[in-house]
Length: 165
Image (cartoon, rainbow, N blue to C red; front, top):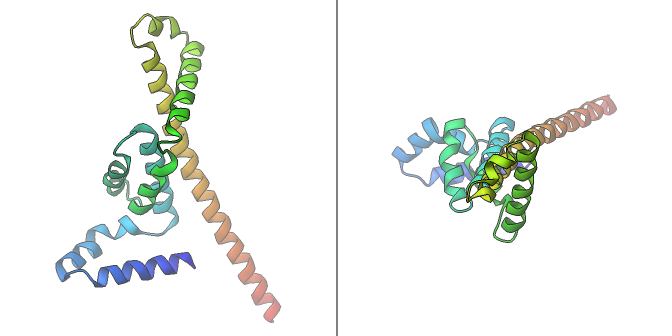
């Protein structure tokens, strides 16, 4: 149902474009607004990744990266909102703690602690872990949810057919 509404919205926006822009959208940029399980899952992964990695300018970065992985640009832009100015201090504090634990577990904490920016290495490692882990989790969660909803519709359709006969 939502997919049909999005498709109608995209088609109405495309009809307002000049012919040359419409040809470009049809040939090159159609996948930037594609509503299918692969493009949406990739969009979530790109958005969450850039949401954690880049504190400022994350939406343009996610939108610019989405054509390279054939992701939905709108979903990528919206997925960057996983971080916001209110949650950023808590996320970076958690990233620091995670990075410090990772450095301690690998035995590199003494080497890094000798430098003047020992907190930076731990924070970078934690943020990278959050970014990659969040992107993978978002991708898998969208794929699971999409397959579950398709399966539920398929079962309902099958039950309706068997009830009709």
